Length: 334
Image: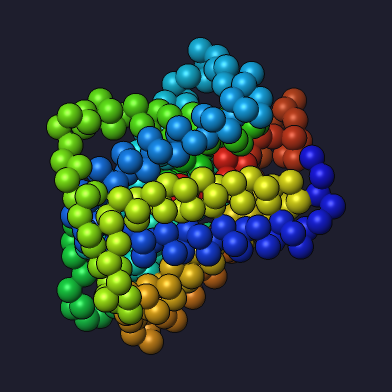
């Protein structure tokens, strides 16, 4: 895989973050049009799966084969990383300012580190723990815990639930990414997410009437009305397939860890877009807290994890498998 142009890779990740940032506000428009969070998650998963199926089938149909041993992990990736993380994410931005919802979700790397330490018995570097502490301080600033700013409790729980599912996505994705290419892995994630929603919420029970309505673009574009289905189409094409494609293209030039760290700009970008578009303003302490959260997560990301000290006959530490905080499964499924 060529890594001859890191500047191009960085540009791809930044552009992907821009699409993901705009996608948050576009999702808010779709939700305000009456599309339920679960329906929006199902439409996004199904639409992305169809587009990615065509892409994989055209490029390398052999990549669609899956083995029995990886099947349960692909199902887990689809349900947690594809279906539930999107549903909880949409619930969070439906009830909270976009910036706060995303900051709650982006505590996922800290959850990965805690899981790796407590369950996988891996030794966590001091830099990672420092990053977790900094991120928690920033989160307290965002939530303004010393005052009652009226954050919706269900929205907050949904944000942390999305973080837990995103952490599962990182952990399961890191296990699978070593044996499967990112494009087919992303397809199977969305395919099993679509299957989950087809079972949990059969299409004949879904009210698709809101998709046919005209809806305002809200905020600064309140006077502009578009069909609700067009917002969902944008979410599928640009907020999912194109954004993921840019991240996949970036991985040809820069490392997955670099992708993840640069992608941490997404919550800030989403908050800026929501401020300009939806006129969702944050207080000065919340802005500072958001930057502190990003700094803490970046510390946790670059700190990584190290396996526990090996016994005498085991491989050296550098040869022991590690759980990366940003697997080659690409960016978070927003």
